[in-house]
Length: 481
Image 1 (cartoon, one colour):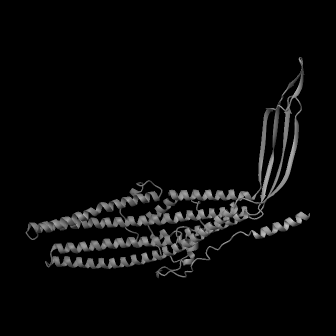
Image 2 (cartoon, one colour):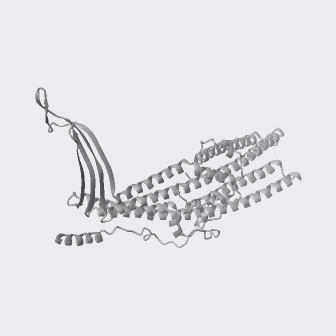
Image 3 (cartoon, helix red, strand yellow):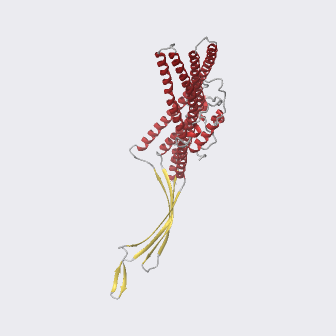
């Protein structure tokens, strides 16, 4: 009784001293109230509206590709498998919190030289080693009492790791949707530019015929013809590169959608314009990124997991209490003698504490503490990178918007110039080459405007990617499997 009175207060003090490590990963993050480069159109946004942002383009083909990709993309499938694996490992970790019960049984036939019996016979008494049939079985139960929370913290670390795998799967989804939309928009931009280039080639051919006619009439020299031939061949040389870019982009879209590279050729090869509509600009506050971007959520989970792992490492310094119980039976039959049977049981407990391990436990705690510091630094870095992504996306969108406006004005001026040149040509005030040159300037301005429009549409995708759009809080990462 006196020993018990000393042990219980000691255990209580140890439990009080083994408080699990807890950190607030957001405490050291910089406080950012607003975006410096946010545009007026980026009004406050409900994070739930970011889940299906691509539908804002109002493009049925893009919607179809997204649906197919979410169901068949191999990166999505691999991420879902990682989620299932991590969740199973949580069950493995949590199983250590409960008793384990095992059923055992054995049987056999044996001869042992320490069992010799005398058997009477015609020739007298004979010493023999009889065969024995032995059967045994029983139940064994074992339970390590989690006095200082080490096993619970290990289970908590596994749960946080599983949650981080969920966030990783959401991050794969966000990246997939952004890549898919970007490639689709670039494909439509390439196709529009290809159509303009074909018009440009036809125009250069017409200009060459005009120069050749002037040369035949003695109003142009051979150098004029050669220069126009060079301009035509240079323009024609751009066409194969655009066609190659279109095919490569279609192949990429096929793989993103979970198909063979050429499977979507029939669907995507026919030229189509860029979507006329665009999603509304997202406008979350900087602090909302912490809950919306999967990479930040993953980094936070990693901090929590490493903090729990540090607590579990510290718990190794303290004693362990194990309770055990077993019960069973055994039977032995020797020769023709009656079998012997017995029932046995045992109850036990054990308390062990580390005394000397050459610094292994302390080194493990130091390593776990270093991992926690790394995870916290990675969380801070991820947040700074997220801020950079959003600011850069806003800058890119503003620049693309200005370029579209400028090239639209340039194209309007080129259209007026072409009309004037045609009017002057009808009245005989200018030659056909001036009309063709004005038309060439108009096509160049249109091609530049298409480039800018493509960049503008892609910049919207970049904004939604920077804000972590493409998933909803209530969606299970493995639900679509």
